[in-house]
Length: 371
Picture: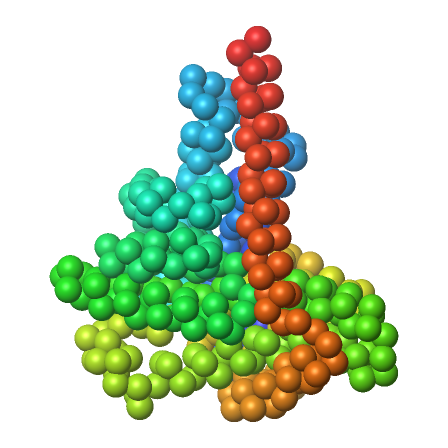
């Protein structure tokens, strides 16, 4: 039986995706049970998720023993692609029932390519071809070099999950990259209705960094703003979404007439990092039409088990109030541009570190098998 809270969330317009994937979830039918019981309709992955999956236990050892002739990076991608392909097959009915919006499984380009447009474009196309499923999504970070790569990848008819977005300014650039990609895809003869995209806007990391700075400032005004930045920042982005993907926007209206889909905001990093905050803070406060919330399992379970009697649209029309909150943070002494630039750098660095640790672990396993 489906969970009431997550069913209500879907009725409001927020799709629940799981921010996790492993071989064990696939072989034990655990993923299928999450679909049936907790309304999970998609999956996101990243280098940290595959690091945890592939270095814990022995679920990948049998396959790895057949992949010892090549480099560790190829072994990792072979195993990850198999997982993503299998997960895509599990979600195929969801994908069909949602006209392609949900039932999506994301796989990320090598995080070491975050500053290399050409390598990102080439690998995005390769991953799309190797997974070979229409409900896959290729994750590309919203770095300066990633933005043109996003446009070029979309132009080839490939669905893209744009990741590591922290600021509204960067989000505007992501939307521009999406629209430009659709326009090029149309010129290239692709069916726009088959192209889907989400813009992954990170939430809890914003609060974690800004709260730390507010504590340092220490004034009553500053301390009163703790825990407000993440939601307000996301709501400002949603206001941009409302304005852009509107029939009153001629550019979007022309694309929509040709069958294009909106690029849904996806709330990422939705597990709270401050234990004083409700575990469902970034779920209930960011519920609204045409959105996705990708949750770590702990947040998913908390959402399912909490007493949430009034899940409603908390996004539509909230831009003005959110802007006042962000202005108050600036007045309190928070350099928002510095925060967002730091978080983007740290985001890329953390994924690269997890990726390198994974490659080192797989290299060690391969060496042990060879010996």
